[in-house]
Image 1 (cartoon, rainbow, N blue to C red):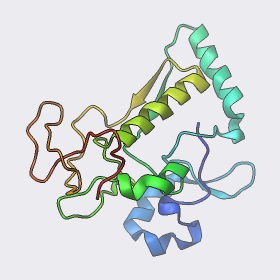
Image 2 (cartoon, rainbow, N blue to C red; image 1 turned 45 degrees about the vertical axis):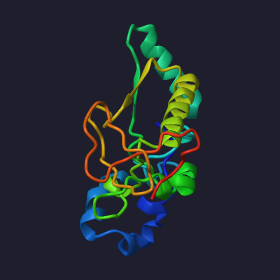
Image 3 (cartoon, helix red, strand yellow; image 1 turned 135 degrees about the horizontal axis):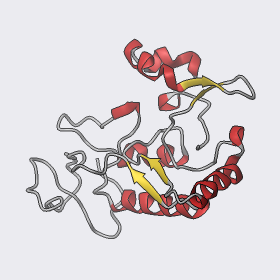
Image 4 (cartoon, one colour; image 1 turned 120 degrees about the vertical axis):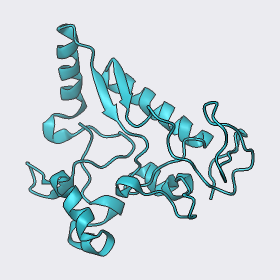
Length: 190
């Protein structure tokens, strides 16, 4: 539905994947590395990002809107799949904010589940990005709803030491090292 990426995870060209990913990671992603049916160029069709640009290979946004309307005319509610817990470094937002927004693990390393950045949704700027992006997608496509995959659980625990105000998350006690800054200007942590 959204544009495919001309690179693999971590904005890595396909001929250099073995420099960035393990053989096991490459094998995991191989089903999502496909040849563009028009150009023959290798593409990553599972690149999570800004949900911008609709796949022109299949008619772009006009074709998607037409398909959605066709389903709606038959009485079907159309829900689009998204996963804002995944943010590829090759998309504009991932390139600009991926590292600074990513969950800090108990080891101090950054979370990189699915071989992409995993934004900390306790950062107000991340929540705003999700809300603004999903609103835009709903308006552009005419869909009835959006599935925010992985939002049905409490999410990652972030062990950032730079978020200053410990607060419970969804009514739960703060886990060791977890705190967050809900001040209006808070945009990152580390």
